[in-house]
Image 1 (cartoon, rainbow over the protein chains, first blue to last red):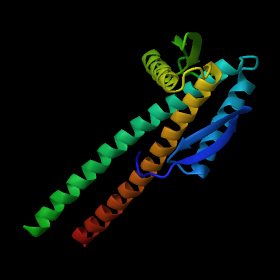
Image 2: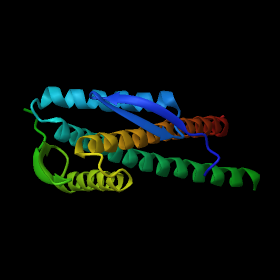
Image 3: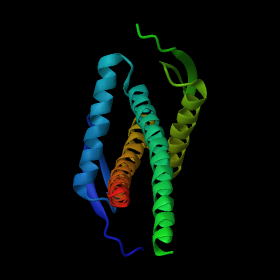
Length: 97
Length: 97
């Protein structure tokens, strides 16, 4: 067993109770649960009569889509950051020369 | 109607067919669908007999958790990037002075 503290958090999403056990803190898990609940309720407004199965899958699709976009933005920003760092190192070498 | 081209993509997640209409390209939507399908199948291995509803909601919870972490990392990187930019601007002003 790892030494990391395990938290047990009970959340409710779309009327379904879940007990989440993990190293994340309770307040973070509650924020995540609220976000999933909001996403499902928004989708339900746009696509009524879809049923909970399909609503939950669509919620997962939406968040995965957002994740993929953010990951692309992160990678681009990391490239830009590395370029700035390389530039600064070069400039500092010139200053020291 | 906006001028953006709309693509219609049919995907299958956990045996459920969905038709997604949007501006995202078909290959991106298929990657997203595959990722959600993989997440649900992984969760099913860890928590068998959970049922599709709860499996899909848990998949959405997992991805939302990953998204929240990546967002935090993005914000931190953006702060670091802005600091480097400010430093470079200051150094360039000193050079020009």
